[in-house]
Image (cartoon, rainbow over all chains, first blue to last red; front, side):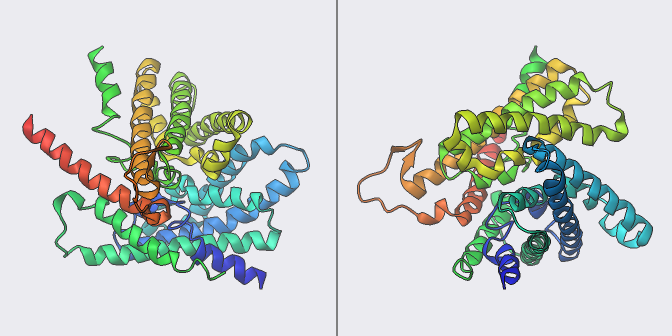
Length: 190
Length: 201
């Protein structure tokens, strides 16, 4: 039950993008087409699950026992950067076509603040090992959901008559605001 | 000297990180429920930006190209940890409001972006000037966004009441949707102003 609660809360109630404002840069940058946004979302989800596992291990087996909490930022970001590098190399070997499709987005995942944010949050809340992985998965799914929703709306907007000044970023922010309002409706769910 | 001034001014308007380049948006949206918080976040980010740009430009010939990004991240993370601990010690209230977004300066694309795009290719003096310009640009953008949300959401600016009696605050402006909508409208308005200015000159 608690697992379902953590997952649903990360996906809907406290959606990482629309409610917590984490990962806004890729949210605005790669939400022009549903296909690319889905690829980006899946790659990010994968890195999140791996990063949540590894940062839990680092926190509980290295930082906490040796009393080094001030190294948290440095340690986590290094782990995330090397995880992204690993994932990149793995995808390149395992499926070159997928690698080509996601090429440019993969290295960008390092600077997605949703991932470091998730790692810091799971330490702050002292989740257990299993809960951390579920939290990472939920965060990734929530990110993907928000990204694909915005991409779907932006694809339709291509043909709409928008005031010149709002074209591009302006209207995208306003749509994101409306989406965020919709997600506000989940507030009482959990 | 003129080049220096141009570098400095560029971050304020032409290449404003928030309104023009659309980078560093996570803290810009998350902490701007009031002008004070926006300003504090902007100043903290500026400090990290100026320090890390200085160090990166000093070390640009020492760091091998292949490991430059991890090296920049470590330099940035060091200064972020300093800000985090200093704020926690001297400004605990502010630190608890800004919360998660202080450690997240590490992955602020503005800081890493300036290290990669400017400080790693220019002299130390030019990098410091560029970082100051970008820092001021980021700070005023966050302060403006915070002020707009504070006026409509609570009827105050920097904690001082500025509205008539009987004003009903728009609660939505203090909530997440208000952040997105205010930024969208501000980007649109500044586009209009920018276009008018360039037509005139």
